[in-house]
Image (cartoon, rainbow, N blue to C red):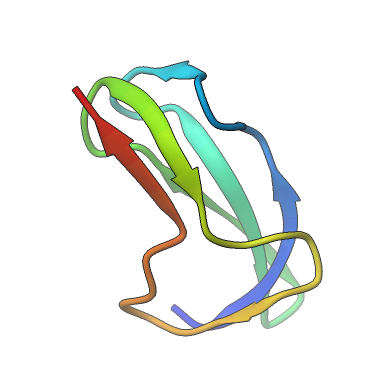
Length: 64
């Protein structure tokens, strides 16, 4: 879903669990949480607050 990044909840080095909200988007005046699909450690955060993103964009990269 396309939208604007309104919150980034993780930073490089953070451990995340499946289902954890990593980024929150605003789309059509609604807040849409983007959740981690797997457990791991954040390797890279590719967005910042205010960025416009499209469906399919890689917002956060995990390893582990």
